Amino acid sequence: MRAPVCVTLFVWLLNDAVSQFTDKEMAAIRQRVKSMFYHAYNSYLDNAFPYDELRPLTCDGQDTWGSFSLTLIDALDTLLVLGNHTEFQRVASLLQDNVDFDIDVNASVFETNIRVVGGLLSAHLLAGRAGMDLEPGWPCSGPLLRMAEDAAKKLLPAFQTPTGMPYGTVNLLNGVSPTETPVTCTAGVGTFILEFATLSRLTGDETFENAARQALRSLWKTRSDIGLVGNHIDVLSQKWVAQDAGIGAGVDSYFEYLVKGAIMLQDEELLSMFLEYDRAIQNYTRFDDWYLWVQMHKGSVSMPVFQSLEAFWPGLQSLLGNLDSAIRTFQNYYSVWRQFGGLPEFYSIPQGSTVDKREGYPLRPELIESAMYLFRSTGDHTYLQLGLDALESIERIAKTPCGYATVKDLRDHQLDNRMESFFLAETIKYLYLLFDPNHFLHGGGKEGDGSWEEGGEAGQCILGAGGFIFNTEAHPLDPAALYCCSRHAQERQELRDILLSMSKKSPDQSNPPTKEKELHPTGQSDSIALKPGEKKTPPTLSCPVQPFSARLSILGQVFTDNS
Image 1 (cartoon, rainbow, N blue to C red):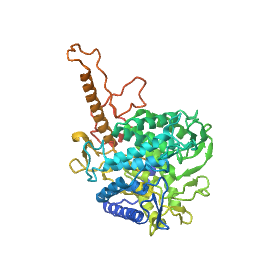
Image 2 (tube, one colour):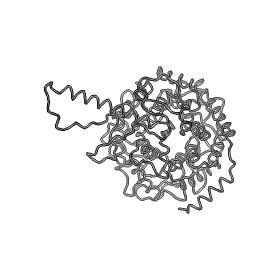
Image 3 (cartoon, helix red, strand yellow):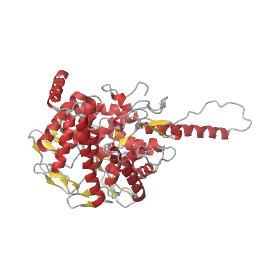
Image 4 (cartoon, rainbow, N blue to C red):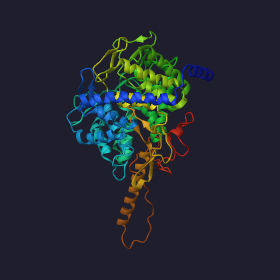
């Protein structure tokens, strides 16, 4: 690695070269991002709803991932991020009345989880801020939460395998087909802990979190002798079908969820898993601050390419305080953007060009996502310049009369007739948040100005105080809500146990019990970091008294002393 002084000089030179954005300029860019959103969003409503996605060249719609108005679900929390409470309320009611998951449709388990379950959970947790009428006990109950639970229950049959690792596809009405292939990608196994743990902690049903944890345990056991995992695995036999190891497509969000799951759940075992992987990744796949694909057992280079999905990595590194490496890798990726006006799906590092049949750019968010995290970490306006470059490139290359189209080939800017739902859920959301450092999702605002919320039974919990965790589809989840509902589930269980104990006593019973029954929370499963027989002790304060992001302010410090 280069000496830190070299990195400092490098960053200083970048800061010196990039113009500083004023508050007025950033506000103007936010307005441009809003205009981009509404051009795409209104085009979907006018031309494609209730289909999953908009086809922006022919101005019509198509079902892609399951036939449940996917773009509307994916874009719901973006409406609130942009401040449109009225439309959020309208769409939330519309979805409750029109979306039905009891349909004979084959759906991707992975995509349905991150887009639908994640989108509904996020909207549920933001419903109070949007001014919706809330059920007593919110966020531990509510119609959007029930919708998320219904969708997740449709995915559970996929986890019924000998290993606990899920099939890649499930029929929402009939379960897993007998002819379904057992081969799925690594990310399709390891990208559930955020949504499923949130569901379990909010509802008190441990089934979801247990399923996600079992999948993680099984996947962890399959790593190679040098500490790497491949790209596709047979979920029945646990044998690797594709043995290319890297941080990009097919693997990416597995690593992301180990880190974010560790932060959201304060789970040291998930963090230790990632850190062990990271040591192998740095040893075998990293070359000159690029990350290549290697053979998982030998470590030999198999594909010297950069994939656009890898661009999330600098942002993930920043969450752990690895800023020097994150900054250098980001600059490599940004150089590719400047070369093409977007990130091609595959980029040959030795040749400095796109890879045949992988020249497209479907308006992915990952580099903008990393820019947001790095700007938050460094204050360097280089990352704002990337955001402005992205905004102008998309406007110039991808805009159509009916929305924004996937770029089929970045070399000549041919367009494809598709607008993925993640353009509204992720790309625009991260662009907006990049230029709004005081947004409530960043922990902006002060006590008394409406930035905090009361929740739980009798309003005993503080919610929305900061530290939101974004799932891999950019749906923000509030960790405070998880601990709030877990506490209430524990209190209800304690009351049930006391009443049950009293009912079993005879009227003339005078002898005290020989041993007091130990009480357990029902809404929260034990961390996989716990040893057999060890019991998890609830913290003194169930609701965080400081933004979770403050716990990451020191490099590498994820866990507090008493967690």
